[in-house]
Amino acid sequence: MRSSHRLFAGAALAAAAITAVPAFIAAPAQAAQEDIVHASQATLDGHRQTILKEINNYRASRGLPAVKYSPTLTGISQDESDRAVRDENANHSMNFLNDSRFGNASHKREITALEYSINPVALVTWWKNSPSHNAVLLDRNVTVVGIGVTLADGSLARTRQPWQIVSVVNGAGYANGGAPSDARSSVTGGSNDSPPVTAPSPAPPQQPAPGPFVDVPAGLEHASAISWARNGGYLRGWPDGTFRPHQPIDRDAMAAMAYRLSGSPAYTPPARSPYVDVSTSHQFYKEISWAKATGLLTGWSDGTFRPNNNITRDATAALFHRHAGKPWVSPSSSFRDVSPGQQHAQAIQWMASSGVATGWSDGTYRPLQTTNRDAMAAFIQRYAG
Image (cartoon, rainbow, N blue to C red; front, top):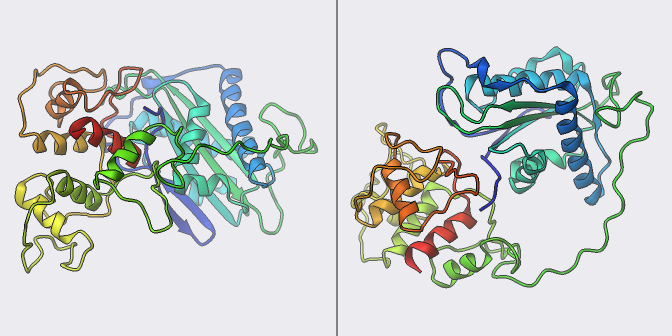
């Protein structure tokens, strides 16, 4: 499975857009400074340079100019990446919106990602595969960036989450000039008079073998599972021929999938919706009502179902476990980031023991990460195939 992480949504303040991860956890009462691994400046700058190079190579491949690097903006980014590790909370603090270090920037953006291994390239890959983050990477209005990099000890003090690297990138645009005076073409480079980093012209790409959808070539990870899930009617694509494999699956689509996985049984939904935020005209009203009636997927105490919320990997495990009839499994855990007593631990262990979920090569399951559509196809195939 992929090594990319969590999932983010966009927001805007005039031309100042941000991107935020879903709520992993609430901030602890006392921040855990000891989770931060104190690396040398050269080490951190090396990771920053890798991230800058990956971003600019990607922009060059799309015909966009390179962004410059600013130590001043990096101060903003570093404060935020340090805070995320101390608080064990990757949600954006929103502090950057009012940070004077941006100067007279007319455009402000922020993206965050984390990895369970020290792999800065994987951070950028994740951003590319997330539509809202990808929009930040390819934003024409961003001309200067700051790059925060914080290394973590791999076992956070409160939650024991195996974070090892967190990066925050702040992008800025300056409509009337006035970019930071320390903006330059590389992290360790000299003056701002250096020529911008440009990537070599990419070779003409080879045409990938056709796959089940226009955005799912045959060589893509889980392409065969996606094709199987499509042919079985469990997961469908969009009218434009896309499947959007790296997009998180929403709760309403999850209800629809569970209904189809059960053979689309005869069911008449109630005339009045059981949820205050799901109308009877909703695309998946029947399936959502059915999921509630069967106990497979329920809502919140405030009467909401939150159909457009992404579903996390632990909640995904719970749904499959319920669908299978909640078979008993040993209280032990097959994953180093899942303890026997935590929420949905038994369901996650059942996913592992039944072969529905395999986790990552580093021994993690990443329960609070959202479930993407390609991974869901793989789960369905292993469960029902």
